[in-house]
Image 1: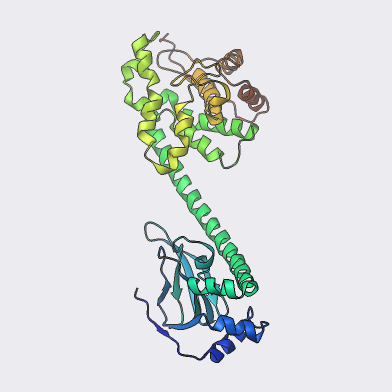
Image 2: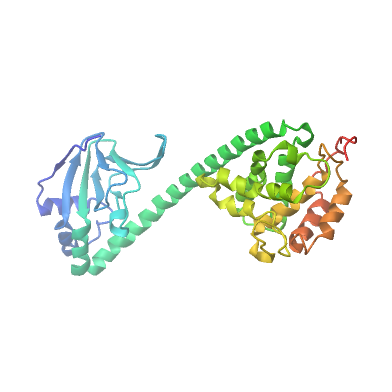
Length: 364
């Protein structure tokens, strides 16, 4: 939309009178108002005019003398979030004074609006000529910017939350389709995720980390899609070459998700969830706390669920036997701290026990 505005031709005395009508300036001395009036340009905007366009260079800020404006943020896909509606006496565009970046929002005149405009270069001059006066203005701008910034952060957080849940819903649909390939494993991804989240909370993983743990638990085995059923369902021990193929599934998964921005954070979690605490795992032989914490949590949960899950080629272990195996390999395969949390979660009822699986007992 084109900007439709006119520059006012008021005298400095008329500008001073307009400043006096604005609460922030009303108690200032005539001398201070005179200095401010010297750097102000009055502009008139028609209804619907764009006063500030998002992503343009920030060179000036504005004070509304009369009128009403809308400050909004635009997102990909055309969605718009209104940050605030401002009217007589409000400041806007203060980013020009406090930051060298581009405009982060668009400002639209909702009514015919008159603004008092101050250019950054002119304000810099005021900073040298009347530093105390400039300081008071900067302090006001900073307070207003924090209010706008806090609202923008809230909106962006909500947008990220919506995006995150959209990813989760999509992944769950995909995983359900995968599980239909093998009815015996139906629901495993949900159970594994529940156990991972319970472990994360027991260990007191930060709330901002839990979504990444959830995503990792859902997606860690995507790389198995590139491995043939002949290898995955082989009865009996795998050959060395077949085991090497299996070990590629973590890297295969990273190839699948590595280019998705939201999933960048879980790449190392998935890459290292088969590392062993003593350094004997794969793919990089990491040991101890060099293994990401979320990977160590996923390792315990994944091993436990794998043991109690039925396979076409073998019977599953009981929950008790699987728990004993986890304890047995504490300190070698698994992080002892995560194992302790695992025992507390299972012992406290923090995770629902599953019913005994139906296994194919005709297979070894």
